[in-house]
Amino acid sequence: MTSALPVLITGATGKQGGATAHRLLTDGHPVRALVRDPDSPTARALADAGADLTVGDFDDATSLAAAAAGTRAVFLVPPADYRVEGWGEDAEARRGIAMIDAARAAGAEQIVFTGVATMGDAKSWGQQGKRQIEEALATSGLRYTVLRPVRFMENYLLHGSPVDGIREGGEHQHLFPAERPLQMIAIADIAAFAALAFADPDGWHARVLELAGDAITPVDAAATIGAAIGRPVRYREITEEQADAIGPQLGNTWRLIRETGGWHADIPALRALYPELTSLRDWLARGGAERIIDRLDTTVAATPFG
Image (cartoon, rainbow, N blue to C red; front, side, top):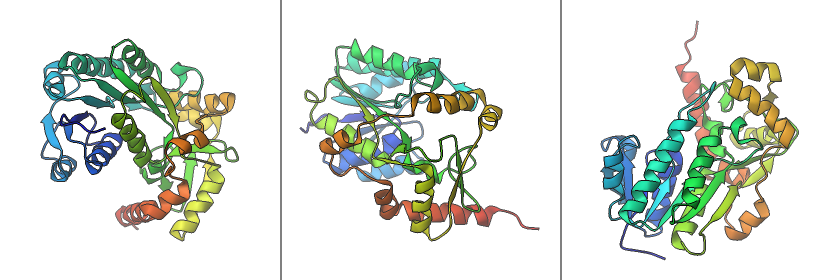
């Protein structure tokens, strides 16, 4: 389904919002992108691709109302302040609900919200703010779809994080059990599911989908990445004590993973909905390997010697 009215993309200069904006534009949907700085490189790239830019901020209700006016739907990914000591869940919930209110007041018909995959107790995985947003959606009177993605494949590109990313020397350090399959998702696939929902608001109304595209042990993932980039990569599982030392949120998550068995997205069912679902090998072959190499080479080049 297409419409002359645009879809408002929040978080448009971020990973999920940017991918969704570009996917919708490719599919022929008009897009309005909510940005803070219209002159940033990512905002200009969206404009060059055909998006209409609107300047606003989740903490400014007037700007949200202006952004939502004349739109048919909203892709909702409110900013969440995350630090190793925990999530800024109250601010995240307030921002998300403010956007729901603005969309409803503007006469938009649909919201697609992207949160986080479930893993047991909501308070232990930064989920509480997202659940408040989901509850507000369910009572909003709008058509809605909830996407709950697991860990991004793009996290292999992180640099400077206490966990994740591939470090100089080829080490991938994380919380996850080394020999247990780890679910992961390509950001482009989140955008693909959002596009499916926007194309069929009635058929996707009230759907809640846990999203993953692959499940591979961290050890096997490291070997797969190493083969793709032509350099050795090894996985190191941090201990509970090390996780606690990084921060209480990381320690809680370390224990939660082992208590619950981790994420539980139904990958075969997702592939039935979207047959092009991306595996880790696919992601590496479609540019992920080159991006990892670029990241590693940039890190080495920036490291002082002597």
